[in-house]
Every structure is written in structure tokens, then in C-alpha cells.
Length: 317
Image 1 (cartoon, rainbow, N blue to C red):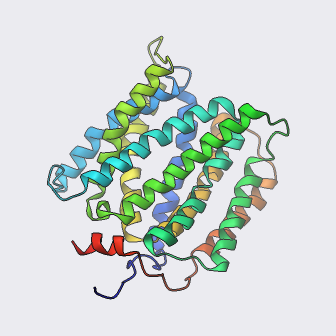
Image 2 (image 1 turned 135 degrees about the vertical axis):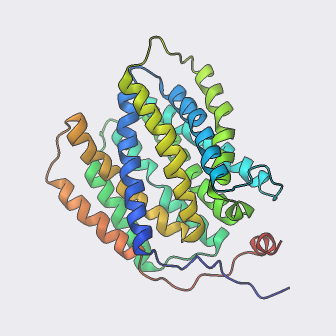
């Protein structure tokens, strides 16, 4: 057996272009939460997610076909693609249902525990390893997010805790999907194909969930709602998710995932201008904490540990 080799991207610092692209993605995802809320009066959440996936799939196919992606080529990616798709679909079921039981502020804090799951899983699955300063950076960034969102309500009952657990479960599946995309043969597939597996598999899962929860569209959606649904399907899922998977294949998964801490901060700013929410001076301090934490996370860490034999076998074939 040949000597173990670390994944080339495991300890690779993010380039200026990758950082700029991640900021754009986080800005989009922060506004996406507002878009979902604006559409809710016309289209229930699970149906929103179903329609979004149905609209994004042909976009992915068109973009991939233009770039010469062979979607139906037998390349050994269908099994990890199916696994990632199952997790992708269930992730959104847990998140949307969890929001029925817990508050939005608690949900967004628990959702962005995903980078911790990525960091933990990256060491075992990808051979990535974070140093003490980088772990401190994750903690500081998370503290900044919690500070920006606000102190959760003190009256927490069993129903709220159930919602919290569902959101954490969604965050764990988000992290697991990232690890599957990078730690299996799926990392060799084109981003459009890797995401296509997930979007296609999520459609029946989300559709079944919408049926089980008794969701329906009772009136014709407004032009604003239809426009925001197109925004979610074409830009958010069809484009930004594809860019995300392209970045995951090229850079450290744990460091990229840490940048998602910025998303709720952009969401708070967007809520101020669009939903007319009130911002306090606390937001400034929170932004400083997040930026400082991300600086620590993106510092060059210790050399990556050797990947497991299972991963070596995948990369050799």
C-alpha cells in the first residue's frame, strides 16, 4: 500500500477570490431567509422548498449541458449522490418543521452550529485538522452570531427544545452533506452534477412532507411571491449552491463552512432595510467578533492528518 497522502485542499488557505465569492454567497443566503418569509403568506414552507427544487433542476441541467457536463455518465457517483440527496431533503424538512416549535432567533443560532459539525467531521473523514487558534476563531464567530441575533427567550419548554433539536439535526445534515461531497467520489463530479443529485432526490422528499403536513396553495400568489420563488430556484439553488460545491471541492471544507457565520449577520441587516427591524449598537460589536473569528479560522493551521484508507481507496480508483 502506498504511503497516505493528505487531501491537497485540506490545509489550503482561501484565496482573495474565494473569500469575495463566499461573501457574495453569504449575502445571497442571508437575503434568502427574508425572501422565504415574504412568500409565506402565499406559499407554505414545504411547498416553497418543493417548488424551489423543481425550478432549480432544469437550471442546473441547462448550465451543466452548456458546460459539457455528462450528467448520465457512469462514473461511480450515484451512490454518494443519492446519500447526499437524502440528507439534503431531510435537512430542509427538519429546519422548516423545527421553526414551527422554536423561535426564529433560536433557530438561526442553532442552524449555524453546522461549522462545528464540519470541523469535527473533517478530521475523521477528510484528514483536515484545526489548530487551537482556529477552534478559538470558530467560538468567537459563533459568539458574534449569538450576540447579533439577541438573547433567546428565557421561557423554554419541551416543545421549544424539540424544535431546537430539529434545527441542530438540520445543521448536522448540512455539514454531513458537505463532507460527503468532499470525502467521496462525488468530489470528482462537476458541481452541477453533484448538486443535481441532491436537488432531484429532495423533490419527492419535500413533496411528501408537504402532503403529510397538509400544505396547499389557497390563492394565486402575488407577482412579488412569484418573482422571489424564481430568485430562490434560479439564483439561490441553481447558481449559488453550485458555486458552493465548486468551492468545497477546491478548498478546506471547515474553513469555508466557517464563513457561513456571516449569513445571519447579512440577514439582520437585510431585515433592517426590508422588514424595518430595529438594529442596536450590539450589531457593530457582533460584526467585529465574526470578522476576528474568521481571521483566526483562515490562518494557516497544522499540517493535515492522513486520510483514512477508505478515502485513499476512493481517490485511487
